Image (cartoon, rainbow, N blue to C red; front, side, top):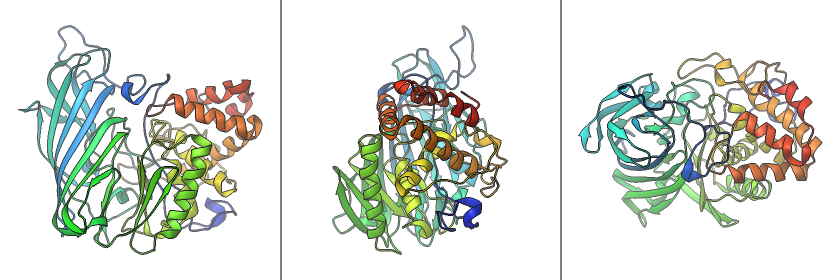
Length: 472
């Protein structure tokens, strides 16, 4: 994600980066042992083992997830009417009778729920926080058992009113759908600093989109596009596998530039720029990160220009949303591409440990650019987003020394530059490739990451860790 608030060069990015450069950000969950996409994620984040005779909710995030969205898009208003089917498989070691779904659009006033059914029957559901929808399954679903949740709802993107609302917004004729649907999560609420939800790798997600009027083929920017009009039409289908979220945009005036890099098709959907500069930068980042962190495993990477100039550029698996003022910005493009590894492939709990995706993405972008980071925070880098004052959809101070950017972004980069220097570049990046490979599609956490790097070739990093973290 990237914030477009204007501050002085020295106050925010250091002398090597332009004053208009933005922070780029985003998401995921946690674990202490290597896991695969099929055994996601790590230790149970919520719920409890069943108690004999108990009637309370028993939940888990250890779930196989298959999403299908049948969505009707109104081109005049941007409103999206959705029927969502979520097929769950219980991969926990105990029976469950409920599931928590994160619904961030509700915090923005953009979500209207019509109905919820489980296996065809009306379901008991409760809003336990502003954005947490707890759905009772109506029975105990045993390990290996399945249940299907069907939800009918409407999402209405609104004119962007702040950095947070850029995720789901309609501006300048562009509808941006990010963090737009009910998704399996641990129970939590939205928060106006950092990324407001924790998500876990799903087996598959499929969008079947119908527009109210005929649009050009490239009007819909989505990853995994398997069906689109030859020239103009009303139907698009996009299907992805082993991803922890799904974003897309709609703009009737998009044009597209594309290129294949190391077997991955990069598509840039743009309106106000040609797309060639963005494509060049995304291609360079993808090629370099394939070498540094291991091969990007997906067949495509989509970058889409959104309607707003302010707010955040945002990353989703296989899809990046770039604000108009940053669509060609080197740092922002590199940072968002880096998020495909840090949160996309290697997940973390972005609310509890945001440094693991934001800090590593900041480090990666600056490393590729050959620049350092100036920071003045006295906080530990491994703080949660709650260390920074915010409301549900706004807050955070990006310009103060003790703020989110200097602490989570720049101070992490400062530490990682020292870790790389002490280990040597070859060993540092070899260690990172190994950690990502071992936990691909799963989760990491602070202790697991710190210990992995220190354990690689017996690197002596304890004094560095003690200066920058409290979890070591």
